[in-house]
Length: 125
Image (cartoon, rainbow, N blue to C red; front, side):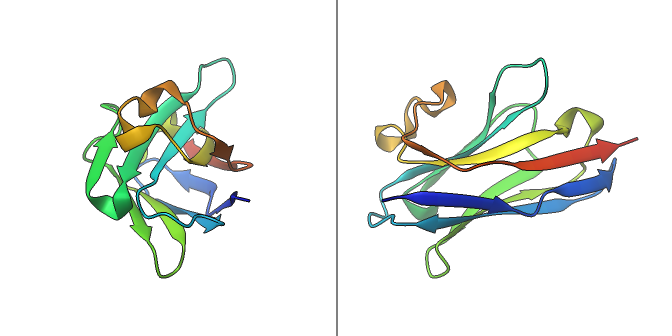
């Protein structure tokens, strides 16, 4: 059974950085599509970044490209989202997701089999 648990959220001023972590339990295949999504009140869930096969390929939403970086440490069974130059628009609950579509080809649709419980990020001006 795959289980995910996010951590690392918190409050930060605009321009600051945070690193989110997601511990991965029960994932046996390296060829897994993993991703980070976010959702803020009144807005639709947004795909932030995705990673396939331990980093063979990565994708980013246009709104975070160049500021956020997704990575995976297989030895620690952990997925990361390093966030720099945070903006107030980045305020949201962030979720990690696993068991995504084959080769991550439709990851932005949110068709993942397993989700974490979320961690909140608040960016103040």
